Image 1 (cartoon, rainbow, N blue to C red):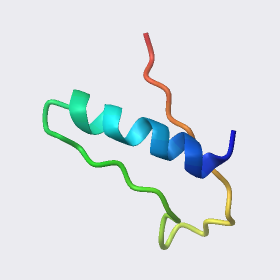
Image 2 (tube, one colour; image 1 turned 90 degrees about the vertical axis):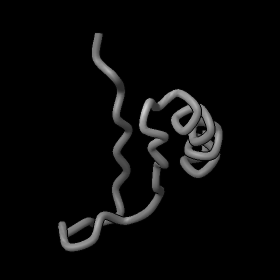
Image 3 (cartoon, rainbow, N blue to C red; image 1 turned 135 degrees about the vertical axis):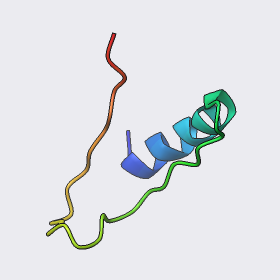
Image 4 (cartoon, rainbow, N blue to C red; image 1 turned 90 degrees about the horizontal axis):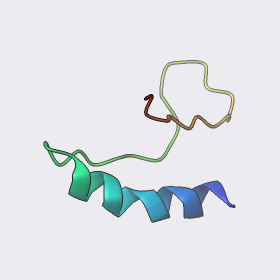
Length: 45
């Protein structure tokens, strides 16, 4: 699955299920030496 499609498919769920209505962002993490990799965070049990 394309990373942009993954983000798009999860965005609404994150917004709707966050008690503080967090809005996820997609993009480079500035000032970190980001070399274009991707991170996917998974909630632990």
